[in-house]
Structures are given as C-alpha cells and as structure tokens.
Image (cartoon, rainbow, N blue to C red):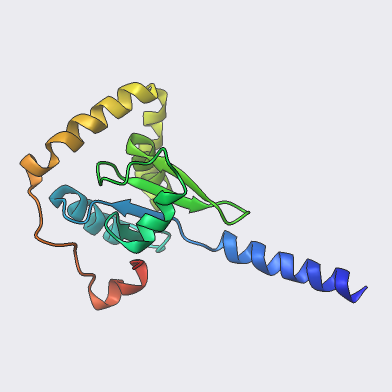
Length: 156
C-alpha cells in the first residue's frame, strides 16, 4: 500500500513540476531584431510565463540536439515547451512567433489569427524578414547580458 501511495505522490509532484515549467524562447543572440523582440517580450510578459536563451547557448544546444528538424545555425526562432513526459515540444519560424505571443496573452493573443494563413505562406514571410534582419537591424558584437532583475528569466 505504501508503495502505491508513494508512487502516486511522486508522479503528482513530477507532473506539477513539468506543468510549472516555463516555455523557452530560443533566439539568435547577436541579431539586432531578435534582441529588440526579446526586450519587447520582457516588458509585455507581465506574468513571466517565458524564459529566454540564445541559440548560441548550452541550453539551446541541448534542446535543439534532440530535434533534428531544427536548424542549429541561428536562422530561426524556436519556442520550446515541455510536455507531460518532460520532453520538449518545438515550434519554429512563424509558428513559434504565434506561440510566443499567445503565451504572452492579453492583446498579443490576436496574433493567433495568423493561423488562418497556410503555414507555407507564413513561413515565406518569416523567411523574408529573417534573411534581411542583419541588414535592417544590425548584428550585435555579443549576446545580450541580462540585467540583474532579468537574470531569472534567462537560461544559461
């Protein structure tokens, strides 16, 4: 009986732990546009639902390595959330952008309406912006260093 009770408690505590895990936004740490988007999200995510990590980080390499469909060459934004089994479910490109704004909530949830567009159309628009981002927004010398009050929102 104790074994059954203990395993149920253990399962419930693990489930709660995973359900409380915050999704991770993986972004190009040296991209001027990406840096501005992260700064914007930090201000708009009032409930601190999101965490952040540059694609150049160890955290990103760990997440991306288990998903071969994700390029690790910093060409896309990635939204990673843990499922109940503790495995990352990945969205990238336009779908990641929609997921991010949906998680921020409030007015920004309106971006979910973009799902009415076919994925290939959304991703083509995303790719056009991604291919021109350094030209339009510049390239940073190094990844952004979080301010003291932001440190808990960034993963190594």
